[in-house]
Length: 89
Image 1 (spheres, one colour):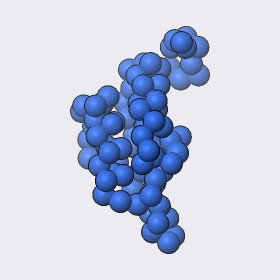
Image 2 (image 1 turned 135 degrees about the vertical axis):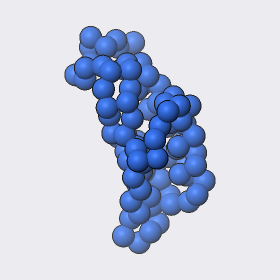
Image 3 (image 1 turned 45 degrees about the horizontal axis):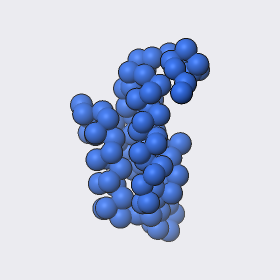
Image 4 (image 1 turned 30 degrees about the horizontal axis):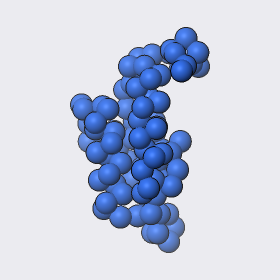
């Protein structure tokens, strides 16, 4: 398991998580629920949405303040294991 010393990031830090999925209220709700579980004090301004040209897909960019590499890894693990999430960067 990597620790903060193995990371290229210096913690704590602000980090932008990009999540892609099929556009639906369920997708957006699910992603935000996962992130809120790990970052309870997420502000409304931290979330940006961008639909694809044909509006079939939705990209969410959520800027979070993370305390450690482990916290960031936990967020990514949960996001990528969700069937509504096509990709998380």
